[in-house]
Image (tube, rainbow, N blue to C red; front, side, top):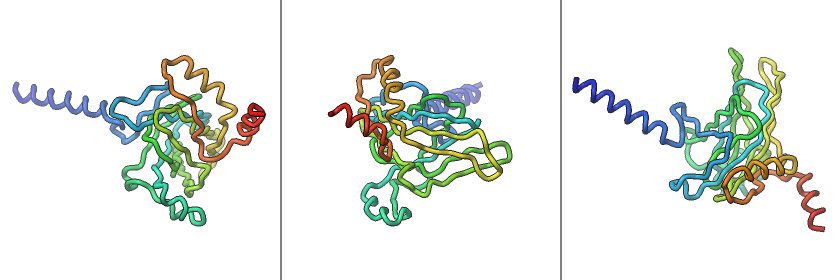
Amino acid sequence: MKRIFFLLALINFLFAVTFNSNANTEGFWTVRDTLVLPSEKQKKFGIAVAFVDLQQANVTITLRKINEKSLADSIDDLDELDFFGGKAEAIKLDLSGRKNIVSINLPAGLYQITQVDVPHFDLPYKIGTNNRDIWRFRVHRDKINYIGTMKVSPIRSKNAVDTVWINQFATHLADLEAIVADTEIALPIVHGSGYQDPFFSALKGSINE
């Protein structure tokens, strides 16, 4: 009997530890469809928000935090880009089944999406981003960061599926403002996508004139 109680207590402990961690048992970080403030333990975190249009059932992305000291060396050679931590410490996000927006609380810094996985039955598919800057975004602490829009096509072949990460900040700004207005989160919205949105630049210029 004592052994049974011990086993039950051990199971409850492991259950509590698992669901109080940043990642779940498969190593994926928490992805939400609502905005949630970082916890007290997440002192230097920001809220990262992406809009998604995923026309495949299974989509995951892998990202790593960039050591910004390596940016100068990587201008001419993207292989020179350096990351904090090893590959085992890469952040994995399961976006499967997500619609409209996804929200992730992340430490402040510059990130590179290094891989996109879109498996389908016996058709595993991975796309490497080759460290290109269109697959980057920045997270500012204590801010709501628009980090990009991801689109995955419903059409695929054995070896490919059309997958893009684009900057549509101007398109989605009003949507994001409306989402924030329905919360009690009093943080500013900032642009965190890795490259410029020409439509937002034009809009910003006309407003300032």
